[in-house]
Length: 470
Image (cartoon, rainbow, N blue to C red):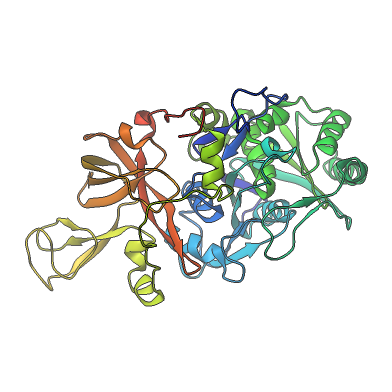
């Protein structure tokens, strides 16, 4: 446990797509408000986004700690989704993987990180019924945190629990039900102010340099920012991402840490099903503590997504696909035996010639020597170069076509994989690509996770889009 409770490392993950128009008929008037929501790709879910965020912070998670996945959109009901994240990260088996559910789970996960007992990912995919008033006010994102003190030190915390019918859904339902926000706002504001004032009193502070407010109720969030003297920087991020559910307090905190100076104080307030308040002092090494690009940089790099394409991705628009059998479901025994390849993208380096074979095998694909021994080597953090491209027009995925490439990995190894987060026509020979953990397909209620390739950040091409989302 660290000498001082706090945050040692953090990272935020925003999907590559943004939706700012929900008109099925683009000739009609645009909806007022100017909101934009982040949209997870058709091959993303809470697990894959958690992996992407945690890749920057979880490498040194020691045995005895907990790995937490906080979400309201877990891909499995009874199976522990954090176990898939644990395997994809290649963590020590002594690290316990746990799921945290419910709208307040994000603040609870942050609390456990700040206490130094866990590394956590906060991830959510938010979906409403088409045409819902808050369709653009919801969004998808993830954030990850590891305990320590480089980024920020915890000065005080306070909580306020109240039973409130605010947002809920029954087992088997897909969309949240929402009570009238005018009623719940008053209760959440009272809970938030109580928690914030007690936390500030414990920290012996009358005011802080930055106020960050996350709430499932936009009226409550606005009232709390005004009452606590917030500058509105968190609100500007929210208008560009939507409310990202469980991930939202972590996302807004990450955005604040991106721009904070050492020694400044931050009040983080999450007002959802009660309230949780944290008072933090920014650490001297806050810049070194960030993993991956800043929140603002990720916002600037997103691709615009058409509404029709979004509806297909979410399964909210039933579209006839190609007359092709469903992709086969993976089986438990080979998934377990080949976990190093499937989840961690490990090849085998031949002890005789030093070349890397992918997938790993008992016989070296280069020199043909068998039984000489091999060393597992992970390729997931390496850059690869595309050597050939094929475009599949009969895919069973919710896209009219996808690109499949063969790519040579820097340092050895060759991958054959789908390419994601880029228009298939923009994939070219010589393009640098990096591995990313995604869901290939779901058959017989089994999610088939594996690694795809996406353009390396400096080479990412803007997506092609038209009014109908193609």
